[in-house]
Image 1 (cartoon, rainbow, N blue to C red):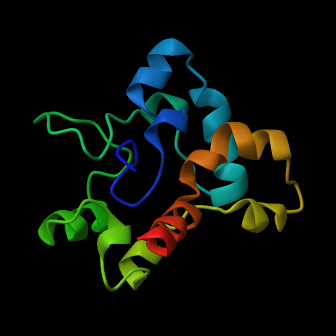
Image 2: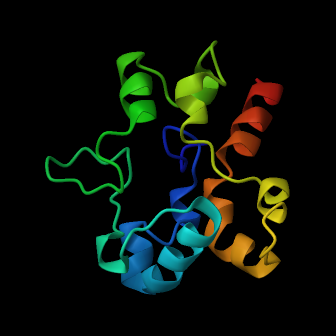
Image 3: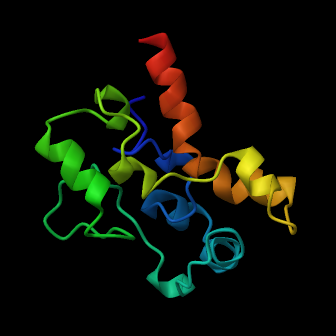
Length: 133
């Protein structure tokens, strides 16, 4: 769980995560995928994230006002899965697509999901954490 964001996303799999951009910039495709599955219109040049755990003063994040991040930090928790109220309405604001939810999209592609959306399947990860702890 140490490589996960505060809400359970996985930075290592995320194409918006700064180290991944430096290795192979796939932000153009990520922008299209986010539009297709999340209806998010974010230009590729605006997709860049140092991670919600980054403590640099000038850290860049996709959403600098993420309600989940502030909630978890305020409660002094490691991540949402450690909270007795999980899954709460705040978490559900940032719930990513499970594979099943993505399949409900008529334009579903398993390859796109595995490559660009698996990083955001936070509920599956945190549910597993809760089950095992």
